Image 1 (cartoon, helix red, strand yellow):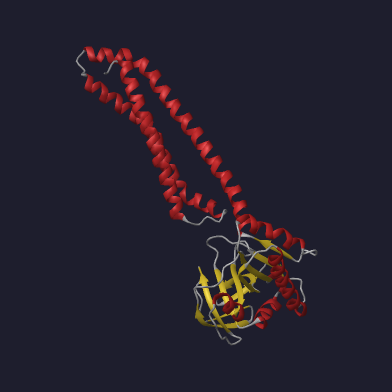
Image 2: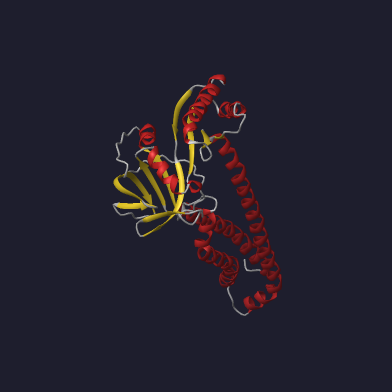
Length: 335
């Protein structure tokens, strides 16, 4: 569970007092609810975006089209990860995604030297809208002075917050019940609460609705298509009954009749399925981009789901194909 307090409009001299007050409220709310605090961490991260050209980041207002930059002080990084680091004012630890950096780069006119790379930068929900292809730069800087120096270049484009991460004992319902008194203690709407339990409810509601809608419409269209093809073949069977009887009278064997029926019905049933598979394969890159809007970036999982769905369709089509073939054969007298 995260308690997030924006520092964008807070004067620097009031930050410490406000942060300590928020931390005390979280601990008091947990005690009042009778919950045991199993984990309590806090940090003051910063978020911004910038265009990267040459070796320089220029802070910009646009979101979703730039490089996201996340800032964390060495003290916060050490408290969150347990790794103590000592950095000079111009030194940073870096974790870069979709981005190649030289040993020395600039944010506006501030030079930074990469003292090392890390793979355990603490992740949290950003206030910045990004896509799966957006370059991300995670920086551990020496102290708040460096964060302030970056913010001074354009304070309106650097978003800072005080974030408390707390884990409680108890059931999911008891953890959810902890949120209401915590928010009630915040008469001035200083902070917001982001809980795993609330997020889970929202996600299940949204994605559960999409899942139900997809399964319902999929089954509806599948049954409609299968029944249309089935009754079309049966009606054609009555029309072809006389023709097959004539062909058997002139020497066509029952085995040849059954083979002809299977070939005809197989083509009618599975040609649309093959065409649908080709369409899905052609649209796959675009569908992946659409899924990224829902923060779904696992292309391999999507490919497996698409293949599994196609196999389910094939199994249902094969079942109805066998039923149609037998019924068609009885109608035309092929058995």
